[in-house]
Length: 228
Image 1 (cartoon, helix red, strand yellow):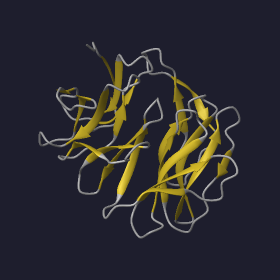
Image 2: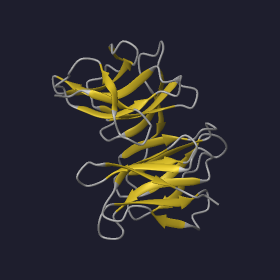
Image 3: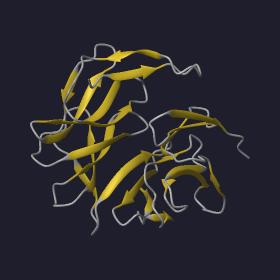
């Protein structure tokens, strides 16, 4: 029935509660803000996908994009003042960024020949993580020459920087099935497969020593990591 649940991080997987009223509208990629006060989410109303913010304290939703083209996959900036997202404004999914306060529309961040999906923003604010429709996973520096750094050409899928910025967790079908991998960053010299029977949507724990992911049958898994 479309409720957002807030599980507590005690290892037992018990729901802490629900966020707002049941919502039968199509929803995509909920992301909790760094301060925990909001959830950014892609939400479709009357066939049009936009970005919405939901207050965690009251469960009140607020629409923040108003274009007639799809906007989706919100990603928070480290300071919680901006959102990175994809928009179909130019006939394909490009990367945009916008302030959550006072902005009427987003600012184009990256326009390439292929469609793109944003996945993460590094803790130091210097890099964003995204993939392209041809399967390539890249990191885009927001300073300097802003030249994308290719991380994988074999299917990046949903991906996340580790809290210390030294690793990237991502989803790839390079082994024949969708699995979760952890790869060193920025040099892709060390790669470890984490899931064994299928996995997707990896998410780091706050201390960088735990990784969560979904199995093909939508079970939420947690893996303890020893990082060296």
